[in-house]
Length: 273
Image (tube, rainbow, N blue to C red; front, side, top):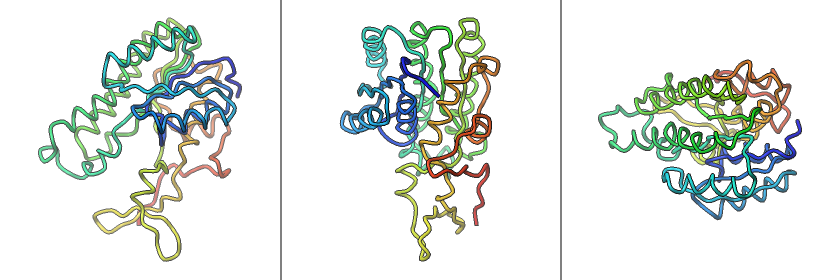
């Protein structure tokens, strides 16, 4: 899986899923612009990309600010002249934690703006700026989820809209030779998830649910596993045949033959007990 000579832009790359994707793109040899608001964690991600074998470039920007987004892509254009891979991974996960189980009328109105704005709208705006720089053979991946299964109005609408966004963009971009996918990870072992977990007496880390059940988070996939799924798509010579679809990390693991960092494949479903 060789991405040497290719240029990637990954949003939401300071931690979690975005960082895992950026590092795996670097491990495949890509030059990766890592994007988020915080300069210090971005520098750490950029260094990790370089250590993995690529070239990591910290590019601080608030992608909720259209001016900063435009400036980001102007910078990449000036420095590289192209973008081969755009990954939209930015999302408001910490804010969302306290919202998922609550009815929409009890939530602040801006919960909608955070989910739709930092998710669906930001993915649209970054694509608008990236497309003129994407050559034939380019790739756009937007991290999503089966949001319609989550009992939260803003989240469900936002993720469903993101999937539709990928499908509609793919229809138009296929004529340019650019593939677009919506990517569904499973449960992801991010820093945020681990911070919310409880350690049991026998040493397991579990996530407690309001109804008293618990989920063993050690079964969850790491952010690097999602990164390997993106690398698989980026190196797939026939991906344009499937453009516009929803891909899952579990299915891509089987298709491309990769595992997680510990050599295992996370389950496709999770038992909560």
